[in-house]
Length: 139
Ligand SMILES: [Zn+2]
Ligand SMILES: [Zn+2]
Image (tube, rainbow, N blue to C red; front, side, top):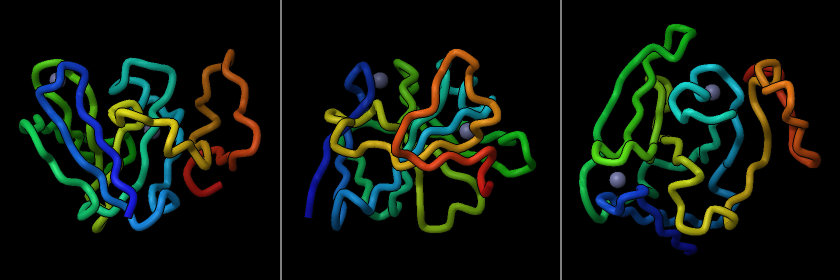
């Protein structure tokens, strides 16, 4: 069972991720406005993982709940000291949560499989070859 370690920028938060296989993490890029705002960057990049695969080993996350722009309540968990995003999940995510790529100590171990909300992609940013591309979520 592969195990991955991660944490926030300041080190207050540390976690462990245990997967059955690397493919169990569905890493994807999201170009939506909401992800840009939260990350302060050009896109969000998170992995869909089973909530049970994530274990907090040090510290506590701060929670923010807000409308994701389409009427769904989205919870984001981040470090209250340094602001690093750790997890996010919508009200309909079920048993899954989304883990922020850059919070992993070795993020290259779980590369992205696709891109969502390409209609909101930054104009200067080309598509990443070899990944699936959706204009929004489903198409
Ligand atoms: Zn921190
Ligand atoms: Zn998004």
